[in-house]
Length: 278
Image 1 (cartoon, rainbow, N blue to C red):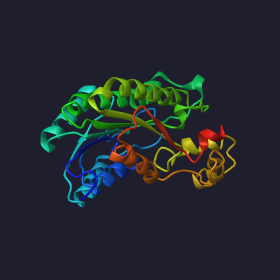
Image 2: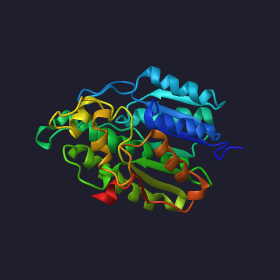
Image 3: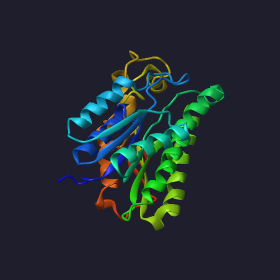
């Protein structure tokens, strides 16, 4: 018996990274999955995003655990597309219990150089897409006598003002405000809404030259992520440079579990003490 037998979870940004990690962990605990991902690059984002092949790999990993999965290529900035994918998944799988608004992008850039396109892609994905995902889920979750759980992905950037990431910081701060507003609005329906705040996670978001250059502005290293390991590690209290996706998944799995049934409106850090150190 898994902790989530008979439940269905919706996950955005599921093609790889944290989204894939969350999907596999929930499937291992008995949940069926509705997965979406843009499966395309964005013009202002300086690193490749997940692909259709990546999303199919997530499908394969879930199916190997004998769970069902409905996967769709959708941009979270498209509310009609998100709603259609969610409705189709619920129609096929029968219900909705867990919602993980995980999709996000980052474009390191000095504030004066942030283009309108970059602002719209980052804020549109990291805040607008998070809202559209939660919004599409509400009427489904309200049908459940037992309610449901929504987890929104924020960041340490949701509590501190990291330079050269003004648009990302603005979006992630917004996610925390959204978490509180939705928790207040949906609590009467036993729908819990919480946010997770990771420090850097070793995914495509940091494994790219633009992010490495942010941590090495003078070009003193070899241009690789390993070359700036020490700079990343200096951000945290604990002696670690970054998290693995599973570290975030562990917190998400707690928040959607019965053990967290009385927790809502919270913004929980999994940051190695990064915010404490600031």
